[in-house]
Image: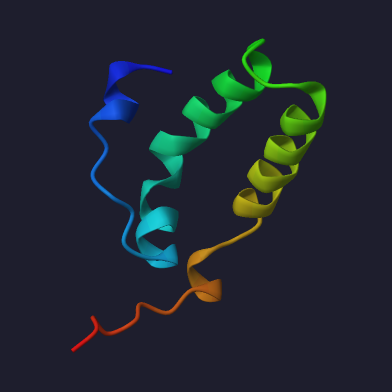
Length: 67
């Protein structure tokens, strides 16, 4: 992973994650393709990337911040 990932502010919500997915996805693909993960972990990450790719703005509703 790059140093950019280490400086990533905390992801606050699913909506926030979706907004950042275009930046996060290449990082996840690079991790999946590396030898840092076991084959089982690579398969799980690949499935999670596929899942995130299927989420669109119509699937998410921003939530009000907690009071």
